[in-house]
Image (tube, rainbow, N blue to C red; front, side, top):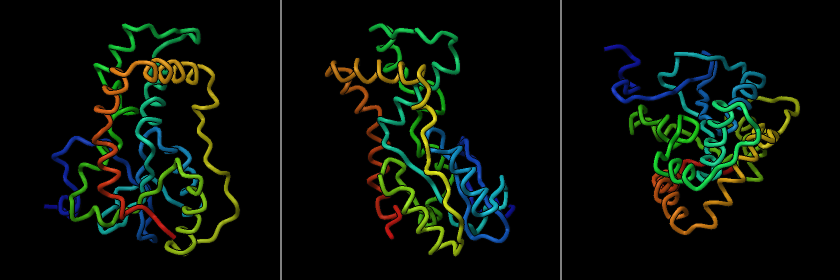
Length: 210
């Protein structure tokens, strides 16, 4: 059995990448729709992190997001990736189909699915950050300074690129409005995302607090 098998469970299907380097005790694990591209760029610039398979004995940095906001954004991303028109309108049948499917691709699945391959004994080595918090960037900067012992010039705050995409905003707003107006739809979405919210509560003590 290799060292990797000791620290990571490959029997679980998982889409997981690690960014780090041999000089750091930390690795960054990006999760789709959670400022993941920004995170890759950030750690590349401030810590010289690159895609790596050297994650044994490392501590992990993970960004999480409010499950509903992530789901809306993830569904809108699917439409952006798969349809050409910017005038697409979601009818009631389409809303029902989306809620019935629940997850259209990895942009909208439970965000903790990415971490399912990490054995429970390694979970205590994860430091979580909430991208929705107003203090997200300040907490991350404090962490990099105090825990990683790195200094860097000011780096642009994360910008949710999808929110600048008119096409994605259109789909997301249609979804939000349709679900908000229908109690049955709201209950379906709440049930769909319950595990995601439960996971956030379960791992509350692992969220970074300066």
